[in-house]
Image 1 (cartoon, rainbow, N blue to C red):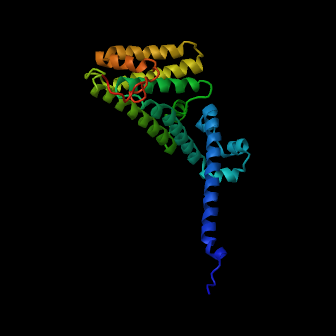
Image 2: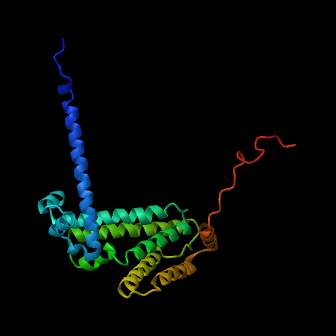
Image 3: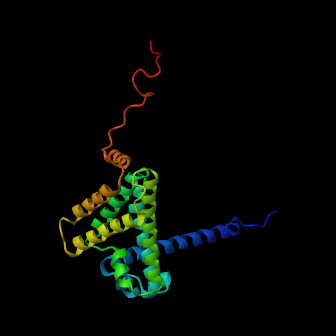
Length: 249
């Protein structure tokens, strides 16, 4: 006769479930803190972040917030990474659904402009972080620089792909195009956020058209125009069309 107990046998599984729930709760709490930290940093800058301020916002103890990050510097780096992840999702991954070439390059810029326009009242952590840490070496600056360089590399790759597709002239300097595109975004942020200029968004888009006027090929203009046309409702397939399957006389 077996002396084993179902209860005893299930203890490792129960312990594992408790551990999983604890881990999930910890991840949820960290995500909540990060979301609050991102909101604070957007308005106050990365230097405005503190364990105490986050504890007040999240209604947690300072020790509870500290346990998830360990230091103010680790908190700042985590916020930079969280901002970058959201930026990738809203700008990069949304834009690369477009075909390679000029349509994708335009989509990257348009999504970038859209994101910047939404940050007029809050602030861009890439831009505010560059002001705060431009001359301050250390892990936070390295994290910021790394994220911005990753984004620049993505834009540069899109430019090179546009050249490979024959949508941009072969002699165009990818770094110059990238520089001018980024310059438009910086000007948009400055004029819209600091000067509150109502025409900043239109001027940024006009600036992109001037870049494309300088470097786009006829094939690129055609592909770009086709990608920008409104999508018409799909026509019924042959299989679904009336009389489908009947032999023609």
